[in-house]
Amino acid sequence: MSCGCPSGVGVEVAVHAAARARCRVILVGDARQIAEAAAQGGLTLPARVTIDQPGRALPPRDRRPGAPTEAGGRAQLAYVDRALDLVTSGAARALATGPVNKEVIATSGAPGAAAFRGHTEHLQARLGAREVVMAFVSRRLATSLVTTHLPLTKVPRAITPARVASSAFWLAHLLRRLRPEGRLRVAVAGLNPHAGEGGLLGDDEPRVIAPGIALASRRAAEAGLGGVSFEGPLGAETAFRLAARGELAGVVAMYHDQATIPMKVLSFGDAVNISLGLPIVRTSVDHGTGYDKAGTGEADPRGMVAALRLADALTR
Image (cartoon, rainbow, N blue to C red):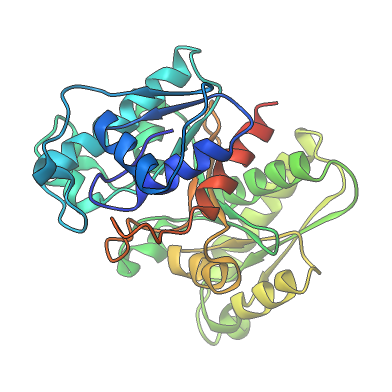
């Protein structure tokens, strides 16, 4: 487990999750800071929890709550890369990641950091994965994204039938692993209001999204994902309303906030971010660095607990 930004809540929630875990956990971060977070939380880490510190210890100024630094940015990336190396080498079964600050990493001056746009993209590049899909899962909702960290002006051109199919297929793949039996209805949201209103509000739905749904159906059939149906394009508000009521197993969203707003309204704090399509299992929290709560001892560890449990379950 990488501990995230040393100036945020990542270390605190990682320590609490590790202390509650039933599996072996390797905490990748600053050893002194991990020990301080455990002491602040009144925790004694069990023997199944070990600490791996890449490089030198951070001085206090580079792990001060709410005040990230360039050195802290380099450390964040080092934690992610070291944790990934542990998984690819076979020393660990899965990767759970703490929240990072993308801007601080990208401007830290670390080798390759300037291209950092998030865990999903970074892990895809490092692992050479052909396709990777960002998804969020909670008890009430499951959703995947066709596009991730893009300015809204670039989203329409980035949506292709192949990307729609990939996002839909991998969400169905995950849902079938979590729910081996029964029918799975997966809705694919439209890009435009009311899914384009029959072309009055845009033609992305029939031109790009519908062909992607057809392609996803073929991929699912070829992969033997029985009992899965893809529906849409549906208006995003309708799709998420039906999913929240339990009438749909999941929703494929076209862009970042279309997925994360309903997810965080319904399940903030206990949802899990998961990267699908990678050759490893990677999970994370659904929240950011929480600089306002860093160092206060008030950070909510439920998201990291859930991320660790899901990673453990998917690798068993």
